[in-house]
Image 1 (tube, helix red, strand yellow):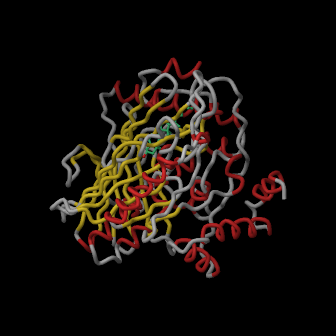
Image 2 (image 1 turned 135 degrees about the vertical axis):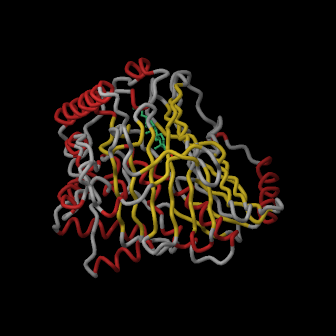
Image 3 (image 1 turned 60 degrees about the horizontal axis):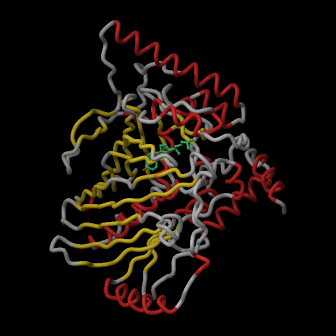
Length: 471
Ligand SMILES: CC(C)CCC[C@@H](C)[C@H]1CC[C@H]2[C@@H]3CC=C4C[C@@H](O)CC[C@]4(C)[C@H]3CC[C@]12C
C-alpha cells in the first residue's frame, strides 16, 4: 500500500467504517509489540466491552508550510515571551499549549505500576521512566501550539487509564499554565505549572519550561519533584526544523531522600549523543543503586552500576581500535541539520526495560507529527458538549477550524479571539478589576517551596455557572 492510500484510509477512518477499525487495530498491535505495560492491552480488551475508542487521525491533513524562512518573522520576536509571538498560522499545530502539556500523561501506566512496587528505588525507576516518557511526544513536533487565552481550561478524563486531568491558563503575561491530574483510584496526584521561557540563539529557539512538576504517590506518602529539560528548535533560519531536549533533570523523593539525576545529553558535534539520556538513582547516603540509560525518543533501561561501568570500559577498549567516519557530521556553515547517525540504544546484558515509546501512526507525518495520543486530544467525544465548561480548549473555533484544514477561517478566528481578550483586559483595567483564576491559586510548592499554582478543587463538580465568556 502506498503512503497515499494509507493516508486516505486514515482520513475516512474517522467514521466508524472498516478502514478505521483496521487502522486503529494496526496501531494497537504496533504498540503492544513489546510487553512493557498494560496500557494498550487493557485498551483493546475494554474496547470490546464497549468503552470509548479515541480517534487516531485528524479530520484533515496539514496545510503545507511554504519554504519561506520563518526567520523573517521570528527576528522581530527576539526577546518576546511565547504569548507575544504571532506567527502565520501555517506554523501552528491544531492544539493549544494546555493540550500539548497534557501529553505528559501519555504513559500513565508507569505511575499505576509505580503504585504497586514495594521498594522505593523501584518506584523511583518507574517515576524516572515516567518523567522521560512525559517529554517523548516532543520528538519532531516543530509546530507551535496555540497560546491559551487567559482563563482557558482543558480537561482530560481517561477512565480506561484511570486518571483525570484539569488545566488552566492562569496568567497571560507571562504565560503560565497550571495542571492537576489525579488517579481515579486515589493512588496518585500529579501537578505542576509551566512558564516557558524562550531564548533566541540566532539559528535556534531554546525553551526552558520553568516550573516544578510534582508527583505524589499517596499510598506511600511520597512526593517526587523535578523540572523538565530544555527544548530547542533548530534551523529557524535555514534547513528543516528539528527538536533537541537537553539538561539535567533531578527527581527528588522528598520522603526518603532518594534522588534520580538524569542527564538529557546535547547531541554534540558528531551527533553521537543525539536524544540520549543517562543517569543514576542514589539513596540519601549517596549510594548508587542503579544506572538508567536510553533515549527519550525510544526506550529507557536500568542496570546495576557495576555492570554499567564494566560494559563502558570494554566499549572504550573496542572503540579506540575502530574508526567510524560515517558518524562524522558534515559541517555546513548555514544550516545546523539533525545529525544522521541514528543507531538505536545498545542494550547492556542484564538490563531491565523501564519504558518503550509507542510507534506513531503511519499518517503522523502529514498530521503535525502527532502521536496517537495527541490525535485524540482535541476530539469532541459524544456527550462532551453537555459536560464541558465553556472555557474548554475543544470549544476554540480557531483550533477547530485549523484541524479541519480551514486555514483562513482559523486565522480570522484566532485574530478575533485575541482581540476579544485585549478588549476584556482593557475593560478590567478601566473598572480596576483584577483577573481571578478559577481552579488554581498562586502559592508555594509544599515540597520545594518554589512559586507554584495549586489546584483549589471542585472542577469535576461541574458547576460552571460563573465562568467567563472567552470565545
Ligand atoms: C519554529 C517556530 C515556528 C517556533 C515554534 C516554537 C515551538 C515549537 C516551541 C515554543 C515553546 C515550546 C514549548 C515550551 C515548553 C514545553 C514544555 C516541555 O516540558 C516540553 C516541550 C514544550 C511543550 C515546548 C515545545 C516546543 C515549543 C512549543
